Amino acid sequence: MREIHVDQVVKTVAELCIAANYELDEDVIESFRHFREKEESPTARAILDQLIENAAIAREGLFPMCQDTGFAVLFVEIGQEVHIVGGDLWEALNEGVRKGYGEGYLRKSIVADPLRRVNTKDNTPPVVWTEIVPGDKLTITVAPKGGGSENMSEVRMLRPADGVEGVKNFVVDRVSRSGGNPCPPVIVGVGIGGTFDKCAWLAKKALLRPIGQRHPDPFYADMEVELLERINRLGIGPQGLGGRTTALDVHVEVYPCHIASLPAAVNMQCHAARHKTAVI
Image (cartoon, rainbow, N blue to C red):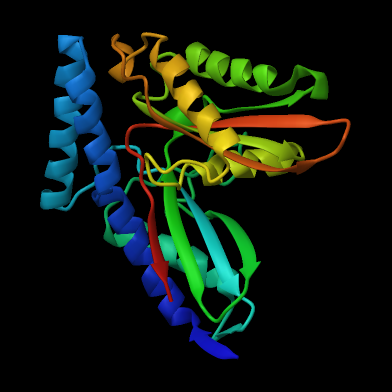
């Protein structure tokens, strides 16, 4: 059994919170360039240029690329041969977020109660998803999630008879109704199957996949390509000001489901597609 001290978890999470908010991954920036070359709208091209410049300024200046530094969503893969020592893992994850958002001067966006709306002032608690995996490693991904794009997400319990076309129409309709609200160009995470809650988790986890990396099943890979083409024909464009670049990519994740159910979920990610991963 390999031991990992909670102090290492705190340090890692804090660093990931800062890096995720300061540094946009190269696959996203390269996608801006790719769609910029294909754009016909001068306004859309100018916005994509500004997004590239904004990402460079944030990285070089060491400050957040967006004022909304998000809800700290953590995906934690725990090797079954790992033993956390020195304290409680949940408290360590909390402390890492508290430390990262404080030292990184990141906006504190979390209220302690959804109706009484009092800010916790340290961006805790995070949302933490854990998975038990083989091995002796602890893999932590921090994905700050902004409110604008999160608010455009949706779960729908479709009928099995709605089939693949019902799912595709739901996804395209969700993006269409969102317009410029999620700060396009977006990445669209789609979860299909499981249960009401599982498909929402799948949709969010789908946002972590690098842009351009297709689903390993050709059936779903083709669906991703078709959905991306349909969404980019909506004409919403960057920041909702028109153009062919409404989405940078569509990622679909699936899971077995009940014979009477066809859950589907869409989780939208704005152009600031932030996430950083570390393996301890």
